[in-house]
Structure formats: C-alpha cells, structure tokens
Length: 222
Image (cartoon, rainbow, N blue to C red; front, side, top):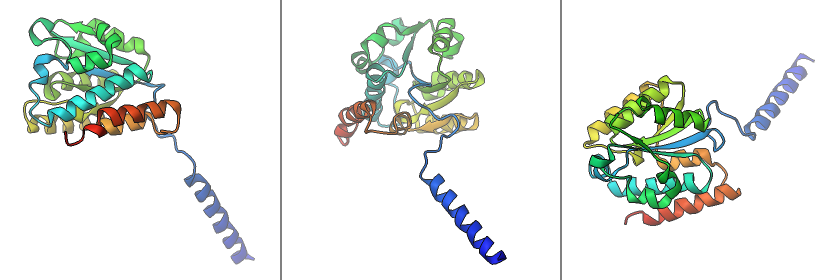
C-alpha cells in the first residue's frame, strides 16, 4: 500500500509540474505596454556625432524603431534635450518618426541628470508608469546620471544598450556594468521591445513586428 501511495504521489506531482510548465509565468517587474514608458535622452545633432563606441547606423535604426513604437503603438514616449542652442535639435530620424512627441519634448537648460530638471521630473511622474525604458547620449554622462536618479526614485529601469553610445567602448562597458550593479537591466532594443510585446499575433504585436522589420531587419548589413 505504501508503494502504491508513493507512485500516486509521484504521478500527481508530475501532472502539476507539467500543467504549470504550460502556463505563462508573470515575472516580477515585467515590462508591459500598460506599465512602461520609453525615454529618449539627448539624441541631438552634436551628440549623435559623438557615437564611437558602437555602430552608429545600428543606433539610428533602433532609435527609429523605438520612436515609432512610442508614436504608433501607444507606449508613452518622452523626449528630452539639453542646451539646444549649442547641441542642436533632436536627431531628425526621431523627429520624423514621432513628430508629436518631438514637439512636446522637455528642453533642459543644461542639466546632465535629467531628473534635476523639475519639468522633466514632473513629466515622468505624470506618465504614471513605474517601468522606464531609457536610452541616451552619452552613455557615461547624461544617461548614467539620469538612470542613477531613476533607480533612486524607485523606478524599474531597462537601459537600451544599442540605442545609446559614447566616445569609446570602455565608456559604454563600464557604464553598462554600473547600471547592472545598481539594479537596472541592460538589454538590446529588440529585447526590450519584445519584452513589451511578447505576442506578435495580437493587433499591437503585428504593428510592432512590422516596425521592427522596416526599421531594423530590412536594414541589416546596409
């Protein structure tokens, strides 16, 4: 009888395990379109020319994809610039992909840490999203200080590595290591977007898939 009981217990445990394996597991702090926002920090005419840490074309393709996701698929998109008179306007690829968000951009006077600017801090708070997907230029200056404050303020942060950049690879590498140490995720643009939209069979998933194909996949190697 004891042996039969053990066999039945093992069978029941196996059935529960198999059933659980097929179910979607909601991970803590999972980023979704309903709880997340995208922040583009200081992708301006001059700072775009400072990208030497990685392939600039890849950064541009990813920025267009992110801007279009924010503009076309209803994920809040906040754009900010610093010292436009000296550094220039937001890169034209972002302007074209998200004209309304560009027009509503937060123009900072020169603060390196975006959250020091009260208008930026309030704008982020008003989004009512606790998960922030952030990329910016340069990785080791404005992005680093902004991400630090975001984490300190209690936001969950994904840093998009290949939509950022700096003047050297070591500046990127050390900054990415630092972001991980303070609790931020460091992901590619594709990884971040597909965390938001995990089912390409839905209407929004279809839109995102098309944006990805148009802005990233079709431009590989070009």
